[in-house]
Length: 288
Image (cartoon, rainbow, N blue to C red; front, side, top):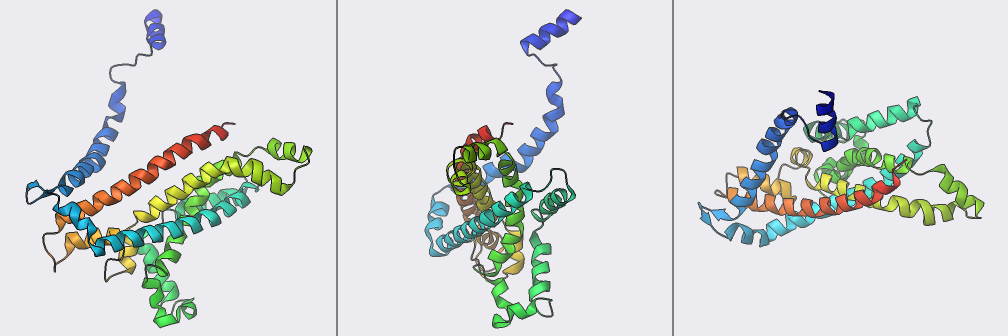
């Protein structure tokens, strides 16, 4: 029996039922990821049951292009602001005592805030800045209507979860900086600026750009928060998809919605591919 088990270990063979444990996961991924993706991809190239490029051509309409452009702008602005502010906070947190209450509290709080969105987040901002909110005086412009603008209010609201997400994602990279590297720089006569410009900066740059791309994707695919704040018009691509699926004015746009969803998938796929490449490069410096 021992020889059989040792032979199985040397050969790398697993028991025949070893994959049964992950079978529910594969079923879950197939039902909720692979099948919807195939429906979107196939449906984008079909119209009324037959192959057609009508839906793809609809992506060239001014309304769709405007929604895509505004989604990219909103995602890029919130990603850059969230990445810069979150990186500074991540460095500040990294200087706290390891295992201390401050570090544990901040990281736990950011873990909650990074997942806080949708209708609840939109209501929190409306209760704060609109009407009799505690900061209603700051929203005196047009009666606080700035909060419902995609290029003003949504930027502020999106930063609420972008900054904590950046801190969580970027903190391991900052903590991967070894004290010996700073000591070696100072020993060789380098200043703090030299250390950040020639040592820490180049090491953290791939992780920073990768986290920025992750934040871009997070904002680009956000839907519920924007839907709760913007009730009229479709200034963003996710809202455009919702309008094409549920509009009672223009009917028969379901296949166009699939084409717009395919457009979003292409953008996200490109961004996440770049993120994966940068993440592999940055992971070399995180090995203790």
